[in-house]
Image (tube, rainbow, N blue to C red; front, side):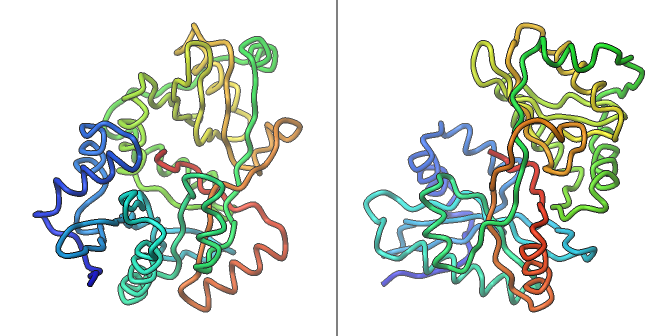
Length: 299
């Protein structure tokens, strides 16, 4: 008989093994996540005859919807060993996690499906497509032409305080949007994560972007965020930081006015309300066709 419960320290090795196998990541990379971001305190598992066969993590994050703040749970790293899939274990584990989150005062849960085919699976559990982002593809020459009159006047030393300063900057910029609120430790972790791919944070007091190298010519800029009117400063700083890259894939808020005439909007996250107040806010946003923003997805 299977059992659903919070993970404990004795399961650490099994969790690393399962995540490594399911996501095809090296064990040192999974351990990095566990050490830096994912706590066993927020890990829930399904065991069968005392063997961990399915697991997920919960990252606590606030979310602003319709001008109100809600306590949100970001479900991350959900996986089941291949030999145990299609038996309902993950469905039951997610439902168990919902009950725990509800008892802990969470008002909504959200996640990013690893592949589009999983949207149907999560839809059966009550999740709806919700978060959107704008994706813009620009060449180096197109960026330089867009920003030819830009003066690089902003600066910021990469000190420990940079993350709290950027956290405040991000929250100030998205204060009138429906968006997930990231803390300084979330931004620090994202920087460490993308730095593993020889990318990382490029920032100034004008804004920031998390850079991830895709291949020898392409760079992905995640959660591109800047003060209105200073977008060029960050774009120029990124192109100067990565001089050998010719193509840039930019992910930003759909409400970013600088890219109004560029790119397309896509869904990149689903949500489920756990409180009536949050449910009302989600319905209002859907009815008014607003574009709520997740930003960093810790991919």
